[in-house]
Length: 250
Length: 385
Image (cartoon, rainbow over the protein chains, first blue to last red):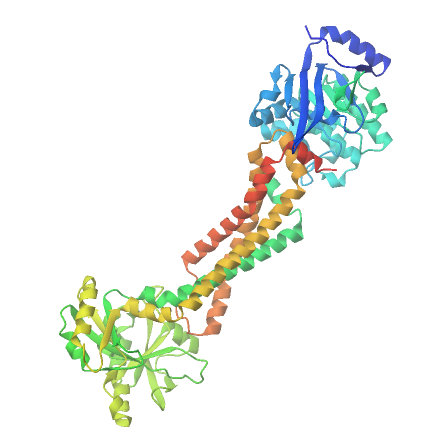
């Protein structure tokens, strides 16, 4: 039985709300956060960023983390994705307490379980679209042929088969983000984390990207946690989680 | 192929910066190699000397000659197999720029004592049979285009007048380091002419050279020879040929030290330049390194990326620098003539150049790699945008 989350949940669309409600009872928590705090120490000053957070995210759920700048939403996302460590509390993802993993184990865990979508795409400028998508597979034991097959499938999924040999600077912002999405899903991760994925894009391109993220969730069943400032982007999510000054609010 | 390709593409991402860095390394490695070769050439004579030979000279200074009759007495010293003698001639061939070493030698036993000078039998016989005959090393003969039978005029500076010799032979070196840029002629020819013009300067030799029966006895024989002439009008100083040669090197030791210091300073400077380049490169890519780490690549991978790039650039510069050292050394050698007889880029110098390139690449990458490996992913990601 999943413990009752001490969070404020704002629903998105009516359909999403209904879907979320129906799934809640049946699906176990993929991400279980308990009493999570994060603070930074600057000299003799302790700066709290996240305070006593409890949150559950079920497998297959699509969550939007919202809040004003400095509210701690990106920090929470980073902690869930295993690229930062909590000051106290526990984060379990698929049963693994990732806060207790060593740096090396955490890196392996991320490679296997997390797909990243960043605001500024974070593609390697010297690698082609193909090379960028293939990047996470370099850590696997797949053969060259298997990797090629997977990359071609992922690029086809995001509609960029014809841009495989292009370098990032030869692609538009939207295309670069689609390459980043292909890279995020190439290892078939448990969880996809997206930090302001449309923050650097115009409205129509942002819609395309959000549509793609929605497909990852709806068609491929990926659990998506997205940080956004954009209410329109947040509408696509099953649940909205609001943060203010490091605290989850109603 | 992924890793080398990534390193290669990263290395040439800023083509101008990388090219200028490589040019800097090429210049530094070439300069390092040339300076080392100059120092090596200075020591070449000493390194090529035999431990089975002693050199006796005036204990006051090389400027003062020794009576030739000392040779008879030295022959009596136990451990001495034979004695030869030689005089520095110091002549000028055509003009002062054509400097090369010239010695008047007691031909028969001198050549016996120096088996490293390879002279064909026929040429040796011709030289020994001709009082105005001379032999020259291959390098010297090639430099001036001399052939056997040519007349070689030398204008004396210590012994006045123009002395014309007939080239009777051209010798080669038994080993790579053997000096083949020296000119030898008969001591008797010089001595007789001197005796006619300046009787008081006759029958004197600049140095006496002893062949030892056993090189192990060098110290004892040296002492015995010097003891023989103690309290005489011309006291002697006997030392091994190597010590004798090193004595010449010691005269310019300060210059050699300065050259060596400069060679290392050049490496340190380029190391600092390269370290700055790598630091700049790494700082610009913190976001990328953070992304690599976020995707699951290890800290070691990021560090290796920087090390490999730095080493790749340094080794490329090193190899080009080494390749450039050879023609530069050749050009330098021909421009200085025969002043440094053994001017040759040695295998040790090439190895030192390669090692210097490796050290440049490694040291330059150390701090950037350490920092990049340690940078927190969240901090690195903040660098993007």
